[in-house]
Amino acid sequence: MGTVMKGAEVAKEMKETLIREANELKEKGIDPCLAIIRVGARSADLSYERGAKKRMELAGIACKVVELSEDITQEEFEEEFQKVNQDPEVHGILLFRPLPKHLNEEKIKNIIHPFKDVDCMSPVNLAKVFSGDDSGFAPCTPEAVIKMLEHYGISLCGKKVTVVGRSMVVGRPLSMLLLKRHATITICHTRTKDLEKVCREADILIAAAGKPRMITGDMAKENAVIVDVGINVDEEGRMCGDVDFESLAEKAAFITPVPGGVGGVTTSILAAHVLRGAKYLNGISKE
Ligand code: NDP
Image 1 (spheres, rainbow, N blue to C red):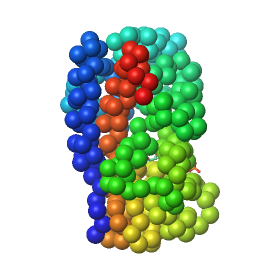
Image 2 (spheres, rainbow, N blue to C red):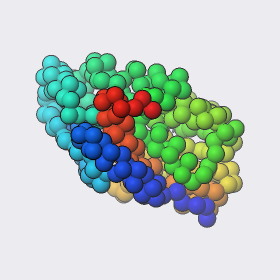
Image 3 (cartoon, rainbow, N blue to C red):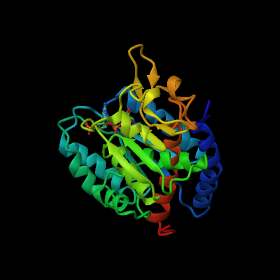
Image 4 (cartoon, rainbow, N blue to C red):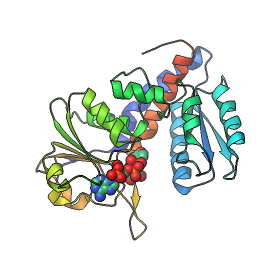
């Protein structure tokens, strides 16, 4: 059986740095703070919110939740958003998406302060990710994948990486982060022909399709590295990834489980971004 890459191990390694950096900011009179903006109460959002609050608390970062009613108007929503966006005590904003259909997300993407945009909504930060500029914020999940691979000593330079999924939150930005690290990327989607073959060619196979256990044992080569970004619920109501862990764990050199894999690193990246946002906003560092 290959090495199981555990999110908790990576998060544990990051914890000390987060605490130290939060303390350094507090010594300068800056109390790092994340604001979570949630419209309605979807169970997936509430579950992520619980995890994020816990992680912020462990790192010594304040976390406030702005809960908005599902029937809020666009005008009221923008007003509430701007209050947080302009609040000097807030250093990072996480807005749960997708928003209810009647709300226009595009407007928000253009008004969020790029230094508070800790999960990469704004075109400014997205453009930086796509141009290989590290000074902005990449979306947390793609960065968590990179962190996971780095932690387990998996080099990317020259590797063939197949990414299944091309969304703007995971597949595409992740592909850009991998490209920046000199991997050769193939991005797959629903129109990809012979997906099995493309997956089998990969040294590193990353699944971000949102389809329960769609990557099966015959879709990866021996000793491949397999990263599962998917978070799904199967027919029996159990949480599972996009990868059929049982059939792939034997042949993979490294593999992430779900739960307990990438998802466990995402909130640590979010915490790191809030601290960086606090530094940027206070003119402490542009690194
Ligand atoms: P989207 O639904 O936005 O995108 C899914 C992508 O996968 C699309 O590009 C789609 O192709 C592609 N796809 C879907 N089915 C297939 C298939 N059968 N064959 C090939 N490609 C396929 O999902 P997200 O990117 O938002 O999320 C992906 C998964 O990651 C979800 O399970 C989500 O829950 C999870 N997630 C996990 C996070 C974490 O912290 N671990 C955070 C964010 C998401 P096409 O473009 O052609 O439609």
